[in-house]
Length: 209
Image (cartoon, rainbow, N blue to C red; front, top):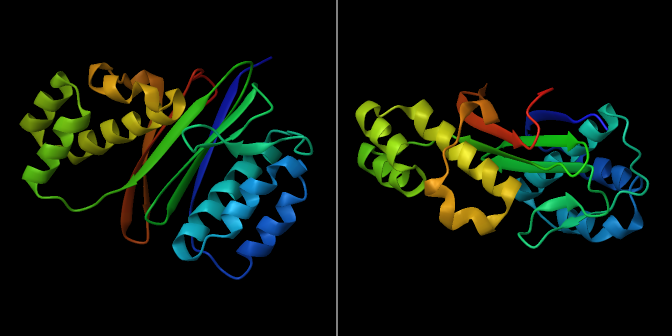
């Protein structure tokens, strides 16, 4: 089977039509996905908007790539991550941050993906250095201290989080020993409504991004 990865993003604006869209879409999936949909529908406010939009992005990517949804079972794994539990050839990842929602989808034998989006927040230089020391390896941290580069800070942050979603939280303790190579990711910036968001997408298979 050819391997493909795709991703898309949106701003979770909400609206009265969002719940009916979830109700309609849930009919297309296996009844064993019911708990996943009920969990989304039980949320309120921004939490609902972001979760609902995350699912709708995944749904649109599945449609785009011609995936039959009728037997797909969406649930949560041990890390609490939504995933398709009855197929090893389809995986998706959803991330949201203060209104922005990102979803990546990969298709292929035994393939996985992880993605992350982060809203650019104001931190003092001391606070950013403190945070950077937590998730950067020694080389990246030294470079960051020299440059104080916002792009470097958020790019490494989102790559780290995308890798966690890909590999699972068992890798958390080893993150500072992992070198995140730019070739392993698709990384970019979203600018909307005066806000800026950095994102990264990771998968076993980087071609076709």
